[in-house]
Image 1: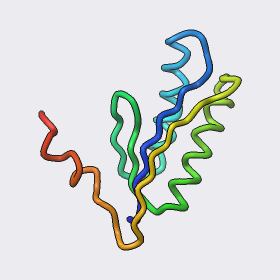
Image 2: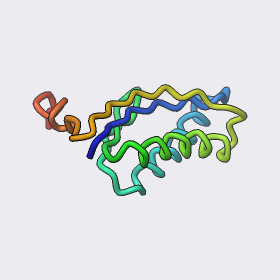
Image 3: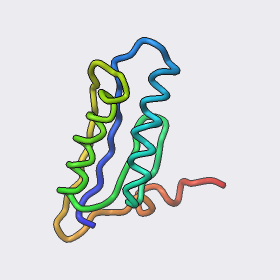
Length: 98
């Protein structure tokens, strides 16, 4: 694993429930990839290889449009280090509560 990506998609739709429906489709897609991920209140973080993660970012935008959004804004953070990046657990594990 040489990268982690945090992505927030904002479909350009008017109704809050429509936004939720489209974002849920994106999260379902991310879950289907088999990659380790964590959903947060503003963004979803994934771990994997850089090229694979960048392809996922593109697909997330396409999913929003296929789901009915005329356009989408995506905010993406990328951490890349060829010999390995910190995992989600490394970054936030000690703060998790049960």
